[in-house]
Length: 148
Image 1 (cartoon, helix red, strand yellow):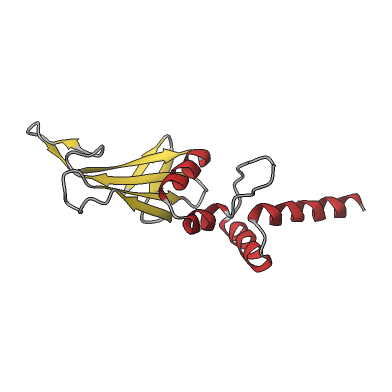
Image 2 (spheres, one colour):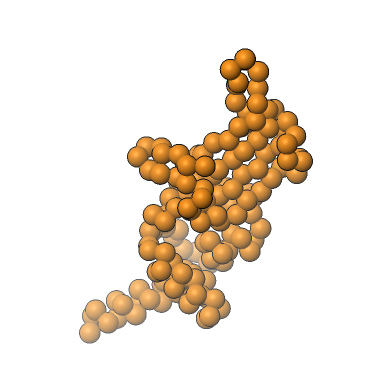
């Protein structure tokens, strides 16, 4: 599904699917719901949801009855992370955001290119570190080089 909201294009065919869930009701049932979390190339998150005629995705038809429907809902990075915590497996969550850091620290959201994101994720996997630890080390190294 493609939708433009507030000047941003959200296209489930072109975005990266982070993960999905369903409510366990058979597809085609009036109460069925399935949602997928996506990340656009520019780093925006959205949920594409579909559901039956008695779900939150229901739409009124031209005769005044109800039918199944679908919609796109943009999410902030924090809302996307909360959605993922609620609906995805630990592995799916960590594939997108890395292993949650159990030490104290600040949480921040930044946009990086897809290539940079993949490089950080790859470095984390190869060194058994979190993505946050990889970034922290890179910044420390960069700061040290700048002061020399």
